[in-house]
Length: 213
Image (cartoon, rainbow, N blue to C red; front, side, top):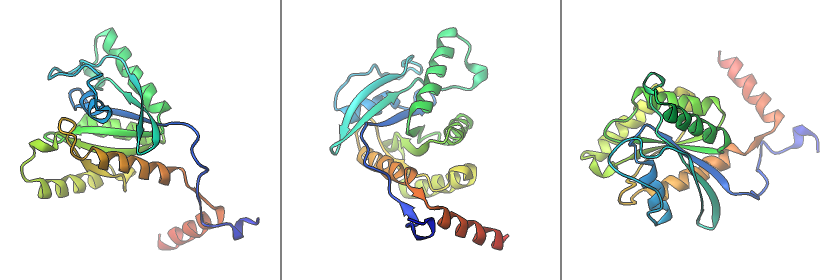
């Protein structure tokens, strides 16, 4: 079929392997607690102290009939604060998990979102070419939820224009509220990320973009 006659959006072939999802963020953002809640089982070591997870832990899981491979990673601190050899290896492990993942959940503490390290992690994920979903964890601790969510959405668009359109999902890894919405966002982003755009459609968009500028 001539490319001019091809549909603008070409849907991907059905997936034959588990969707690989890395969960990354600063220390104590609640990554392991979230994974435990998703699994419905206390399989990972969690606690109030930051840095409990040292190695990337891989877990097979099924959500709504879809197989997943989840990567629970160690918290990623600023490079200047990563001093111990073990912690350096943990961060390197988390970076490898991002590289092998197809979608990355950047988990943030809702009480302290969009800190410098959150932004650097998100930028790294974008540069690696992975689809990205933002999770606002510990949402049960936020009082003025509606107005605060609007503020966070505006901050996401202002601070990370390179990932415009990425979903921002409030959730509580402790109670499980919002976790289904988080995984639905992961599935939606994976579908978008794997669509192919025909050359003809891309050329039309490029022509329109050039005409505007």
